[in-house]
Amino acid sequence: MKALYADKLAGGISILLIGAMLYTLTDTVSYIVTGDTPVGASPPSTQLSQHVQPTLDELVALQMFGVADVAASIAPEEQAPTTSLALTLEGIFEARDPDRSVAILAESGRPPGSYRVGSSIPGNAVLARVESDRVLLKRGAGFESLAFPEANSRTRPDVASPMPENEPDTSYAGPMPEIGPDGAYVSPQEADEEPTSES
Image (cartoon, rainbow, N blue to C red):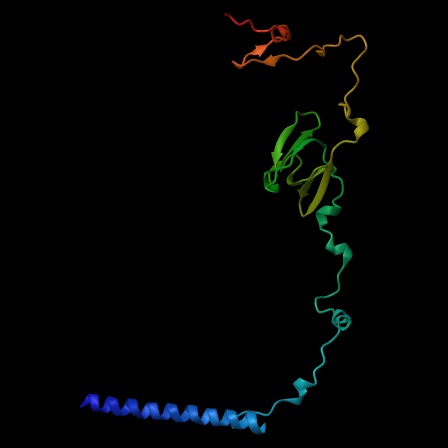
């Protein structure tokens, strides 16, 4: 009995679906042929069809994201003043990962020490960043910079000094030794000698 009702219900739903599809098809064909608005659809808005896109200059003039302040766009640490701490920058190790970079700093009257980015340094400061020519220190809410000492105050020369005249020349100007078939060095005299073959 239930099967009988299920079959009748399925047949009725099929007829309704086929009727809905035929109605939609005839409505679409009518719209294409005559250009009339389909039943239940709202007429197209003329306001959208008359919309003109603004030019780039008009968009820029709107300042949708505010006005750019050039001075504010520079990071505060880039404008960091020179520190007043009694520290000297002795060396740096700049790593690919900036957080692993190390600076060698010396406090006046004490031996130098190495400090990793993020560690505390003498003078109640933190090593914030290591750059190729300076380090940035964070003191309180601000940044300070510490650069290498000026070139004229360095104790080591930037360029190698020439050899004094009274020093002997220790460079080797003779023939270079060769490597034999057994992998051992052969002196130039041994290389010149012909190997004797035993008959």
